[in-house]
Image (cartoon, rainbow, N blue to C red; front, top):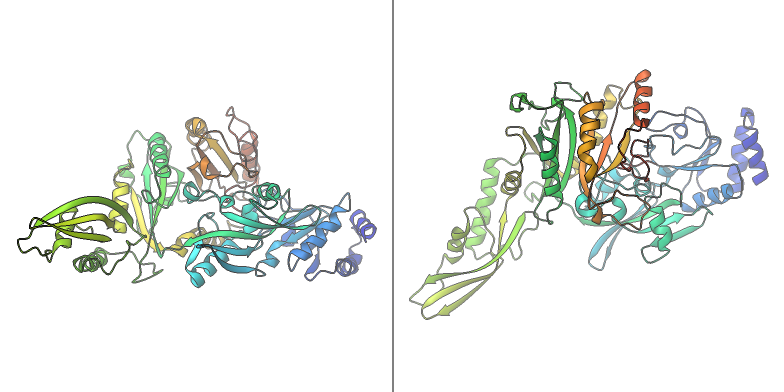
Length: 572
């Protein structure tokens, strides 16, 4: 069989024999899935980058890990046969292609495994490596009310693809990348062995595969950490004219304790002009709102900065409804909670975890000659603290010489989303008047780029070339990067988003294959270009490869200006 396959590899111009070859190979491998001829127009010959196209020998559509194992074992016994695992094809530079080799379509296994696992009080989901994150989201939330903790911005990516890179979005400052939120993997190794691995079982393989760009094996199953999913998200964008103030606020938010900050923090650079793709119109979240440039100082530079944040909350009255909370609705909820407080807090045995919740201890004394507890003691105590703060978790009453003592030994008070958000925003230094916010369902927020994809596809841009570049930049280099790159080289934009936001090294596991810059705080920079075919593509690729005098590391540890696999999305 190996000799036969080797003959095909060296003599693959005999197109008339390919159908017979496919049939023979399929029978020899005894696959449960299928094999198709390689074709320059097939999905196996191209990727999202659109920069290269090569013809594979065959496209393998496995039914599961056993099929993948057989294919890899076959290739491991040859000296000239390449195998590439292809997820949803979102690599940029042809990483998921195999010229004259075998391409494995991992998406053909996506529905093979999906299992919700409650283990020791925690919750996990076991999914196929070829499952799309958008499907994981909808199935987890709709069936169980749970969701993974860490995401990518774009969810039409495979689980195995993002875990082979990093998997980064605005939640990574709190929970780490997706590689920090997986507890077990099933991997087909380079020898074709199907191996289960974790932090304690075959740990060298486990950490090697995570962020290993597919060089240590193919992920066929992953166990992902889950948390209870919120109903709603308040999605906010605020604008800065100064990079130093933008980074100061972004770093402040990502270094706060859980419950004292937003649940999602990202940022991007945009042009200080009215360009529809690169400028002011890219900021407003509500299509009915317009960016008002009169708020921008006349001394502002060629680019501006947008901090994008999100706050999760529950809306039990209207779960997952995409309607903003009105002032009237908020007051209704306040009234309901106030009635609960006057009832001694019995409606809420524990504070709602979806709002900002604080705990204090103090004593309040009420004069009571009769030695009875005052009827309105809870309400009175609430009024002493703050208008519009509600929920008593635990009260203790005592008598002392005719005076009733209300000992609030565990007094919780909860601020509603509108108040919590305003409190957080009040600590930031963005340009006054340049704030955009909407309330959307949790799933709609996470699928925001997928909706943008539909719009871009409508004008044909999505299917064009994407000479993207994604980098890690150390905190010590980021100001120089802004001055040299954003304010100079890219002051007119890139025809797409220019993301930049801080991450925390302590949230990453340094045992994985991902290479990070030094220091606790570092930045991810993503230049997500959408360019038409022609000279502009060549110019963009050349710009990606020109090494300026900035010794900044990228994800694989070399100089930052070398084109690389897309870290913050799925690359396989």
